[in-house]
Image (tube, rainbow, N blue to C red; front, side, top):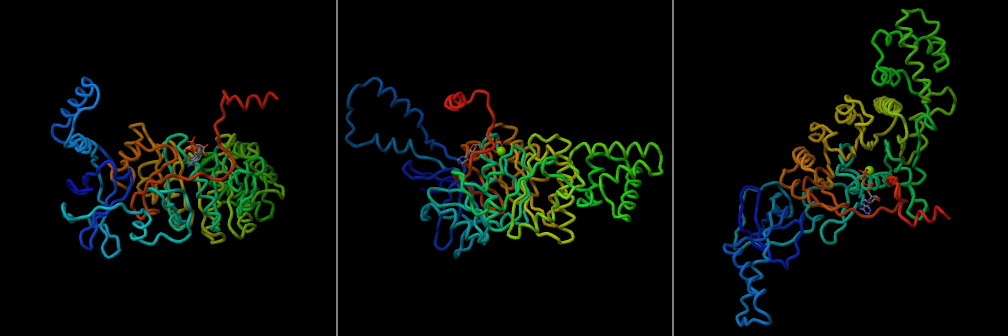
Length: 488
Ligand SMILES: Nc1ncnc2c1ncn2[C@@H]1O[C@H](COP(=O)(O)OP(=O)(O)OP(=O)(O)O)[C@@H](O)[C@H]1O
Ligand SMILES: [Mg+2]
């Protein structure tokens, strides 16, 4: 391999076709004690002057002359070599000097004396800084080396997993949740397709070490709240944002709540009675009644002892745990109300330091997260200790501001130009890298960007995940074998 050209951070390297270099691989151009770190982001044929004519000429010759042709000087094999030479388009990713990585790329190694070698991704990442020691293995990068993200790299951070449908996003998210749980973390998962409930099990149905740390709840079925447990803050936030209660009615509601609290009878039952007997404007009463009926018809509230309390979930899982909130087949309004209640309660508990920080996993958040929560999640709530991972197959559902604030991005394939454009502009690495790598990514491979990889993009071949299949799209034309078992 040799350097051919350098234009700013873009470096062209020529390599023979026998040299095994793939997209995403890291190369080191070493000269004396310094090395320039390169990453291969695209490859082409080397176009030497007159090569097209030569290829054409050889084709004509081959077609017209039958049998062996004499080639005593073995010219054809050299010419073949040249035609197979590859041009590797690389990006300079920094330098390594005395074993330490720095982002400097303001020098040029010699074209003749420098040596180019392939480099193990993990070594490069380690030279760029400490990523933490709580490993979560997600796959392989390059030829053999296993690749892990660390729990520390997700801690206190905002992450995004995006890519087109069925590329493997939820698969990766499940691996990370299992990893976080193994390290004793707390997770809350908004699960749209009922697919996270089984991550405590192996494919053969046996339990993993984290099986007992998983709690799956479905709103209005086994996830019901009590007014008292939720508290005034979460309930007013729900009335204001999910049920659009006007300000005047809100003031009356707060008074009613205070009245109920004084008599220690905060419950759905007494709320109904209070509204009925409360002395106020008829319009206000109507507004209050309308919301009261929505609350009680939603099935999300109960006065019984069975009501779910978020703080109890933390208390009953001292070694960490995941609360999976199953949002499939839940009405859009109930989804919104549940998310509102959980998030506002979460922030309240975190503010009072009643609970430790939490990792939040949110699939297709635009379906249930109100506008103002996005900003809140990445700024205020992150400070209190809610570290969100957004998973989506619609990259435009996430605003550019969120991409800019994201610390880690896991990119799967996008072939659609508009999506590709958006993610390449929004992510923290140059557009060339994203465009050329992400466009050709096969399923199950993702490009990891950001803090988790010390800002050195890494192409990862994601491992299989040992869990029962879940989240599979239901189809009309089932495979034949299954139909016959059904018929039996
Ligand atoms: N690295 C992998 N190894 C083996 N199987 C995988 C891998 N990644 C994904 N799969 C499988 O591919 C299928 C699709 O993956 P997954 O459900 O994670 O995709 P998705 O991107 O979340 O799709 P959607 O956009 O529909 O939610 C699943 O059956 C999953 O088990
Ligand atoms: Mg999915």
